[in-house]
Length: 502
Image (cartoon, rainbow, N blue to C red; front, side, top):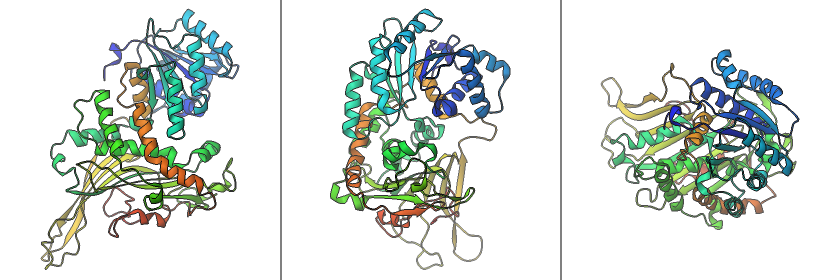
């Protein structure tokens, strides 16, 4: 990436600035960029919302947000400098007058002509806001760039994503649209690329000849919280697998791009997504599984309610809070290798990880010794909260007999003294610099929807029953039926001796 000194200043206009995402992520991330000296000097941050606030009230609110999330506490001198960038403007998303006054404010006051519009709003409002911005000529680029950042979900299925894209295309060029997936902003995910393409020793093994299967997991110990209404219309498959986990799968499986330029990187991801074998509707039950959490004991919280007792959830809901898929990539490198993707809420602990299981040696050389079936080699990449890479190998135990044990070769991606950065810091800075490599292109989004659409269609017709699992567990045992063989099993830890089989 380029440094901030080479970037032009911009105006960050945040729609929905009084909402939860702004409080928890956006404003703290922008403050941390200020701390790091990465915001161009004249950059301004304009919050918009329906509340009749002024600049002073907004600054008070931002101070609370930053105090709650600032790493190492708030530096008053830096915060005073940060405050000079802040302003507030009242806008009702459905009222044209607010956009007209917004255009006047951005034109007549001290705001840079480069403008990034961050839509931290309901997906159903994306089209309305874009249309209104266009009608007051805020999306035109005569004297500076205009970029629009859109949070997931981008559509509800293939057809709705296509309709949304068609509407956006009336007012925006594709290069103006930044579809944000904060999951891809994490440094560890970027480390997947470094691990694969900066270490030549792995490339000869990275194919169907040596890899038995791949697991990609995102588990959460939290329930749906205050997101009940949204979550019940989405479910785990839409919320996590269609976006985040399919993106991780593409990074693991992609061919080396010709360069690290945004389009070259995204071209290779699209090739992987287009190579995923379609799931016929008659095979959905063999390749997909869903379930819903019920009440149970969480390790730290104690007893918690089930999904149907959560606020905003209909008592007859069959929305899945756990989803798992078995997928295949029909290309030369991966033909026949199963990829297992799973996500769930109210599981035993929160973690995201990629686990790559290698095949057993082609010949059992130690069959006449005391060695039992050797543990297969694994490579495990911890995404969050553990940012680690572990490799499991078999070694001989000390002593006179021929016995083995499995050990971890452990590498942490970040030393203890190295600062952790939030994904949004990277992504907000990338928008200023015009780096689109970690943002999703429309064909990525559309192809990912095509992968999950058959499953969503079958599940939408099955409204009478859904399996359940107790909160605080590792999910439903029935999900094990997705595995091709009995010797395959879900990984629950990055450590070889820790909960290998739950």
